[in-house]
Image 1 (tube, rainbow, N blue to C red):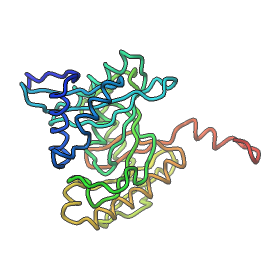
Image 2: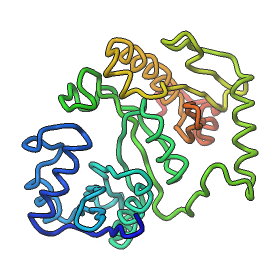
Image 3: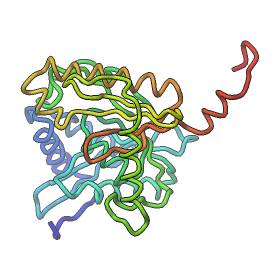
Image 4: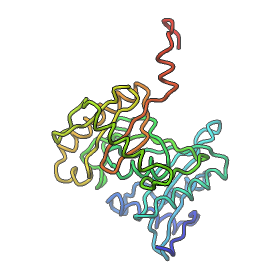
Length: 280
């Protein structure tokens, strides 16, 4: 798709086209897209941005963002989707827009059981998972999420940080570090079993890392066996909520479906410092 262009949308026809594209991705009727065309129009009019990727006249990607509290210098990405290979370009356009208006970070949420999205967020963009939100949206009726609980992993992206090189390149030692991480993970004790009988979570004996596995394709599993998919949801939730409560963040996702959760150094120092009762 060398002819693809990405631009902000400002007209009603464009908002409708983006809403229709989101309907296709989330498998909803065009009369009930994840975001209505008039909602997109209002968000853009209020100072947010609707970006669309076009292959000729055809929409092949879209994302929507708004600004958060002024003091935070932060934007929030409400929705994003793109055909394979276009995600980085779409997010880069969104990043450039936000930075141009003074933002320093961007947040969004995604389904933590969708490993390919985790890999895109952490490996391609260099973002981090900074919060776990249990059943964030409540029941959802679209064709992708229907029948499941809507847990979401909150992502924070430092828009001013240097871009992270893609995993698999060895010039900077990335491939070596990936192999070292996998070896450390396999040597760590299993703390939780997975619904498929294999290991779900492992914990570094030094208490620096937690690793958690997700199914290969949760969307396909949900369509075939909703009860088993829900079992994965609740098992992963248990690992993540405990780790986040202890001061871990999600920092990586391997090609074979393992999250790396890393303990924040400042949290460890705080835990090692004695406190008087009642000290905040």
